[in-house]
Length: 222
Length: 295
Image (tube, rainbow over all chains, first blue to last red; front, side):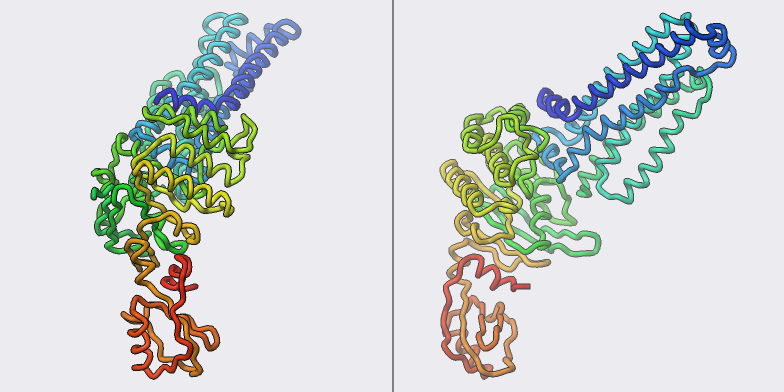
């Protein structure tokens, strides 16, 4: 049963996930080839001052990439379920309704975690190659909220797409946009470090939003 | 005979709009019940209640002994569900979709599915989305046959099908259902082919059930009489004898459960001079239109 669910979800998201993963890797490579260019060919001291003293974020190119990945994977996974109300097919499978949707979400979360994990690792590894541990570590903590935003966006997209009534959808989109913007308020390196745990709690909270869709389904609103 | 489905006093509203009130019906094991009605009469609502997708305002449906509000996975495995328009996971091809569904049903009959697929003229990796409605109907049917459920719930399976595929679908399904003693609940607003399939009929109009009996009983008891009149004003009105009537110029089509003599007597008592009074043979579609009206 798990195998079948994973199989279907993989068919839906495989192309977009692989493409976006490659895009993420290219962006990270682009950031560090820029860093290398600045360090080797321009003024290395200036780079150093900007990062250490001015707390410059040298990796802003990456800022919205995890968000885009989360959004598009969510779209790829859940839009096909709502076309022609195919969600009825999924919910008619001989599995508990909550279980089947949570397994779908679980697979999406696993795929995103894998992609995000590799991207974070790549970012940190390349950072460690060019900079000392302190800079690479702080940079990592700076981009973590962006990846959390990607996860939250994925959960919210699932929730919003499964919502059958447009006026509620619009309300949830406004709420979701405001919620996601919380993850992008910081302007300098390490701004969010003290609140990372709170952000993680918020992401976990957003993960259960899809259960509300199932509740509405049970009430016959789909 | 055992009832596979028992619905008691179903009442449902969409907002303040009443769909129906106190609808009750049973489906016997091995029988095929056709729910016929015009668009918006409540056919899909009934299907949604049966499948647990909709909670009725009041009343209950029991499927294989379980309340449809909370169907267990074990009972859902025994219900084969066809969504209106043969909707399936169109992003898959015929091999992928078979592989997907087979993981959910221990008694999956792979051969039944591929037997039907062998008749389709498609390329091996063609996505379902790029297939014709007729081809999609065969995939949906093949998946149902492979699932081998106790009860088939088919929502308007004729929708979008040309006569050839409609006939193919019905003949294949009927032969299988009768051979395996399966139960079918089907809705349709295209009536012409249903006569070949169903044992029992329930005809719904807005808010109410107009007829519910075996098809044979309905077709023998519900009659159409035609006659000519010259009077410009006819004191015709619907009552317990006259179920419906249509007047086209001087010809009156009158629908009734009453006998020919009873209808003639009814006309005479109201001073209606009928000429060339005759009983007209009806198809199920004629009877449906006679009962529900053309508008």
